[in-house]
Image (cartoon, rainbow over all chains, first blue to last red; front, side, top):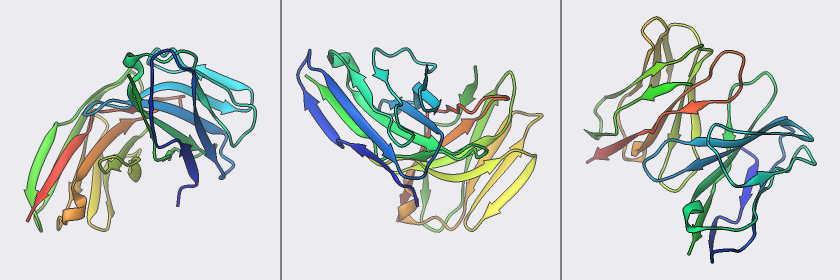
Length: 112
Length: 110
């Protein structure tokens, strides 16, 4: 049912590297979100966007940045990865007027 | 913000019923969601309650009491595939951003 894609699914990198996590949706949804989730913990919102050229920081402070140049694309970038960034990153989207979130499969990031 | 509390783990037998409770404290409320998340996978939508009462959808039902800040998800006729984490999430008034609980891991045993 959900047409929202994240790549890569798994990523292992060294400290100091710049990385971009990709998220794309083909549903034409205006709203997109990035959540961070550690094992056994709640999802924390780190970024969201309500439309093109609109991005906001979420409830959990994050050193990552996002951009929304096209409706369907909402990439997340870490300029210099650190071990503390090791986590699962989940992208989600929803359409205006709907409360239902559609999630991507997530990216499991490990920074050594 | 929202304080969302749900049990960490529950175990039940195949064919049984399990009830997962969720309590929340919020400055404003505009709906409560339940999501299912299998290990290593993305959460998937189960239910959405905005008014008090019981919503039934096949083997799964969700209940909401806004005055008590309380919801539960009822899983009936448990199957092995129901082993997963169940996430309670609250939508505040005038905001589209959901706040999630830590999830309840349900283990179904044969």
